[in-house]
Image 1 (cartoon, rainbow, N blue to C red):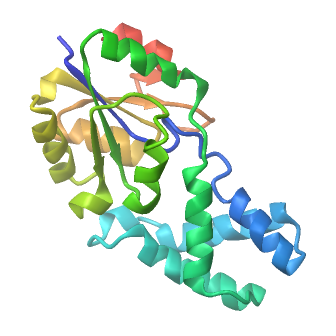
Image 2 (cartoon, rainbow, N blue to C red; image 1 turned 180 degrees about the horizontal axis):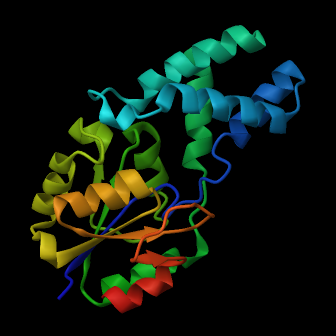
Amino acid sequence: MIKGVIFDLYGTLINANHLFLPIAKIISKETKYPARLLELKIRDTYNKYFKDYHLKPFKPEREYYKIMFKELKEFLGLKNSIDWYIDEMYKTFIDLKPYDDVDYLNNLKEKGLKIAILSNADDDFVVPSLEKNLFPYDILITSHSTKLYKPDPKIFEYTLNKMNLKKDDVIFVGDNYFVDVIGGNSFGIKSILIKRIFNKFEHPDTIYNLYELEKYI
């Protein structure tokens, strides 16, 4: 019997489809470049420096963003400090909205299940975002606090210990096939892929909204 559910955060519970559009709009006011073009440039630079970062020795996401914005600052001729742009971007991350179906987490709590959130993100924006009481949860585990990134099995083990549950007691739900699904399954936790947007990966345990979790509970 399932006693708990572990959720990834961004792309699973919180909509991050246009993660960099808000900071692109801020930079657009300074540079006069169209925000949509800046969003693409920021995304491409992000992909360059964040590629496989979760497989490397841990350092906070902010350190990668510093490298990213150093390049953007030089390329775009930005006038403010690198940390200023990161801080402004983190403010926009805090304002990201949850998906409408996060109300399903209330059903899980009513059933007496423990809910953990497991995110590869920095506490600087995750904690204030969740302080808005977007949805119920019991335990928050971040890479920032553990110095570990999914899919490292140690972060899954740490999460289970915090929940005081065993592998067979929980399911894990995430939107990233390699980091979430392969990572969770490799550790021995039944892992479910949620497809909020199209992706090419096929997985036998796939859902398209949180309400579909009912068949696993």
